[in-house]
Image 1 (cartoon, helix red, strand yellow):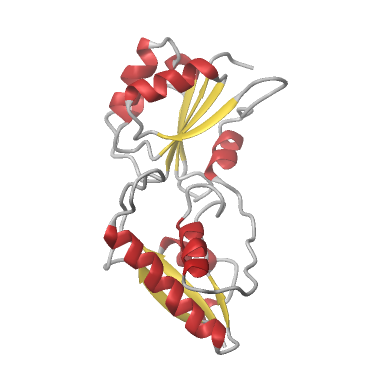
Image 2: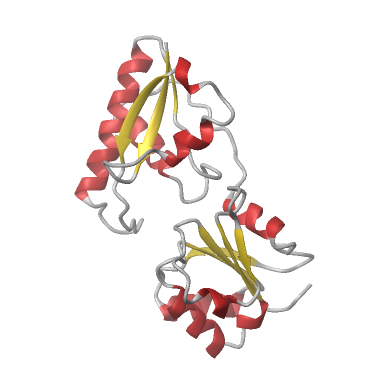
Length: 215
């Protein structure tokens, strides 16, 4: 039997990853395993939130149960599984729960690359340095990183855009910023004047691209 894990952030509503997967595969032929993963901050140098750790472990054990029975399990993710993805937390939990069998990670198109393509903006050229970071970082940490790189991509910007705009203005970097919402989702929006987005109710899928200099 083929199983498909449907990750969700909330008990209500549908799994976005499953909805996207349904556009390219026949999900009706799969056994769907819906699993909730709370949306909480993860700091790798600190102890993981107990609710999150439990969610990862529960998913891993449910997957292992099917794998031990000789069945296949797929775990769809948004974008690329190697970039800020729940998938790799579950991957680590599989190993922690004793799974030593084969796991295949299939690369995807990240919101980083997709947003840059939509904005007709190169991520980095020549000897330019690129950083990808959560917009939830402290201002001091962001400012320090921006001094060391030429291009920055801010993830999870939807709730903190006013603060990031203020910081970029103070650093003289706002004019070369582009905000992309719902990239590749069909209802994509792009702001080359990021200030115009401050009054908008942004979706979680919002990515901010910032260059020190225009190419």
